[in-house]
Image (spheres, rainbow, N blue to C red):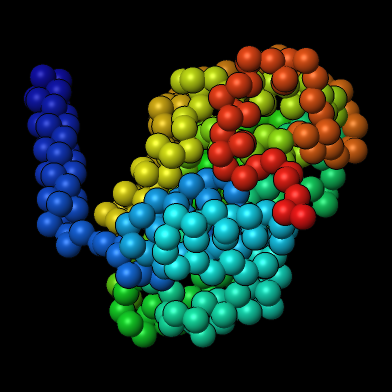
Length: 347
Ligand SMILES: NC(=O)c1ccc[n+]([C@@H]2O[C@H](COP(=O)([O-])OP(=O)(O)OC[C@H]3O[C@@H](n4cnc5c(N)ncnc54)[C@H](OP(=O)(O)O)[C@@H]3O)[C@@H](O)[C@H]2O)c1
């Protein structure tokens, strides 16, 4: 008996030693890897017309990159282009719906014609829809999958042949905390972001041998200013209220500028994954180490949310109440102003 315990202990310490040495080897390899610079690189950011994409575009231009942005809405895209060019640097703004492969190929073709090959692709375009499962339709699931899975796949297929030919390239897929734990009232969103994590991890593994480094970024709530443009179902005013207040709460959400910096650093290092913010790190660890407890906590959180079912969709900007106009959402509203989230006509 004593001998068995001794052998088990020996096995355990050898295992710990091997894991420690493995982690150290990965760390040393990461440190020795030449640092990637964005200077004079061509970067495509899908959905760079507002929010996080726009914040990343600003940072990349400051570092000397050429930046192409896209989005569906021509006016906000144009406002973003004007703002970015004013700051100095080369900017290309192309109207494109990433759900449509023909439009994606036309956008990447325009970048090739303008600047040559794409060095960095950031799949950032996203939509968010909040509401209880009962208010979600099949179309909501299809739309989320179209934007968050097919969109990044189309852009990847459009840039990878040229990256392979040159033996170099970077791809960042912006998933979410929702791609690590399925957050209540965000089921289509979470399902599609989980799918993106699977796609991104697989691309990482298979493209590494071609010199292409793929990073999966999973940020928690960020103050990009997006709640106004998100969609709400069920009791849309109440859904918008809890979501907008959370989005504006320090500790629960992170500034978009800080998150963008962390994501770009992860891309520069060629990291496999960027878990951005403490809530994402805790949720990821919780689901891996204590899945039943995590499920219990999420079930309790779900019970606190409004349960009304209504399949009509309303934008955040159509769901304002005294709560969402109060100081409780101040930080999020300021972010919306900074990051081109408010409808301001150019004419
Ligand atoms: N904000 C957060 O708290 C948070 C947290 C975790 C992850 N994320 C992820 O981070 C990314 C950026 O979020 P955000 O807060 O910056 O969102 P946002 O402010 O709503 O910006 C979304 C961008 O994507 C574009 N877009 C949406 N659908 C598109 C489509 N079909 N084709 C092309 N462009 C499209 C939008 O432009 P148009 O509408 O004009 O097309 C816009 O430029 C998203 O993938 C989101 O899921 C956000």
